[in-house]
Image 1: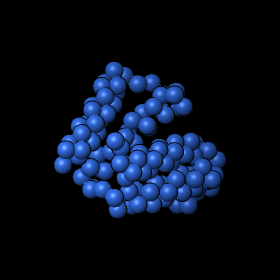
Image 2: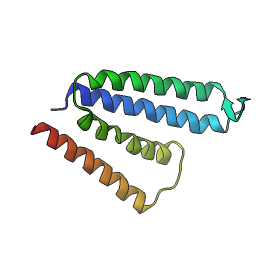
Image 3: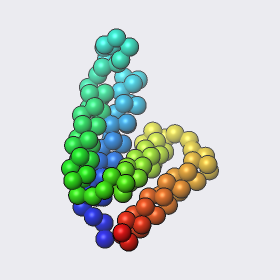
Image 4: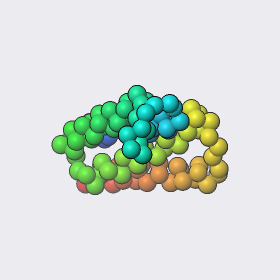
Length: 117
């Protein structure tokens, strides 16, 4: 059974994925610059998405151990990989797929170990 805290972290990783996509899309968009930083509505949306993810993650920490929740955070890499592939149409290699499989396996093992503690 997935704990509420783990589910909250998974939701937070989805918000970080949205943030990364917003940064990628906003980096090529027109906007104004604040020093070296591009500022536009897409990038601002990315920062807001990161803020939501942080608040959700903090809430999740109240209900479980960091040593269990933080490895789940690595699912962000999986979501970014899939978004890059299907939304941004980026190319990926067999090594990328193998890395994603290792991440999923690692998160599963950490979760299984937490069930037995």
